Length: 420
Image (cartoon, rainbow, N blue to C red; front, side, top):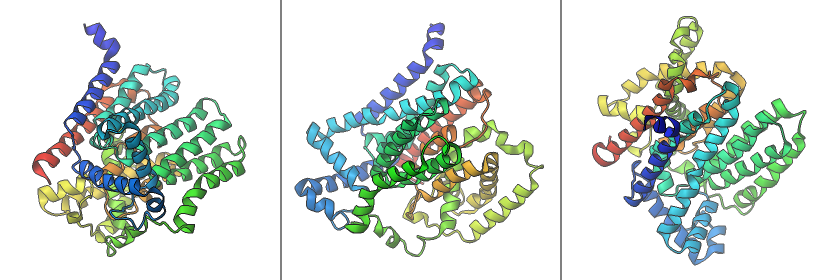
């Protein structure tokens, strides 16, 4: 029996976590609190498009119950609803499509790390399964949120891009562009990752592929969205600036909160790096810079938790101190960690971090926008100089499982009992 578990622990983990999602679907699990209500709201839009599709699609910014969600996403839900008739059956089919994200995450890990460190594929498969514990992944897959369709398409596109690390082929670049564009049509914020891929192509592949062809394909794929938003003037994302006009452009709030969320999801990697404590004294300039940056953020911080969102660290601070003081105390450490990560590969990592800070244009900043995306990026896009022992020493991968499980428990307690 012990040998059986040793040889099949990765498969058993997958079966257990997959089964937990199916059971959660049966019981309408809503561990993040808002996914179920969001889905009910979305169904109103689906019904409106069903009544008069062409008019509603071309006047999407004026229909009743409109929001910032892509009309392509609403149309996709409408198509699935018509094909499968039963909404519940359509949801269960979509769940099985969306959990393919784990497979593509694994495929990315395998290309990057298997040959590099001569790793057993079981370890990488086991690591990829951790996203099934993510409260955001679970809720948004069960309630078919646009971010999960977006992340699946993003991971497929990212997989084709990473394939060039193994053997460069131009078609992989074009497939990457296509799937990232598809992700952006479902979840518009994913269009920002086109910046990273173009930067990478221009910096590392410009002698292997025509940059003009890369630009042209991006323009062709972006044109329908440009035409829809600016020529037809269906600017459905335009009302974001009027939600909370006094705070909408306060990027000090965004940098502080988004930075704290990024650090939360990077804890296993910071643990591996010993939280950069071994270089703390040597990097006095980074320490001073962290204090200066965090002081500026604190001085200009005015996020209103009553409007929801804010990230786990800000909520913990409010829950235990009834103020932002604990959050303010942690900000210099968050800043120090981010500066150290950027220093590992300044240009490449800076591009990714800028995208993460820009990916949330609205006032509300929720964990679900970054979970499990940030964790995936730390393993497949952000350069951390991870060594073989990150994968072979059990404590590091298990710390990832502990992080996701803790996040799930906190979200569960917050939704059903505490509500902090």
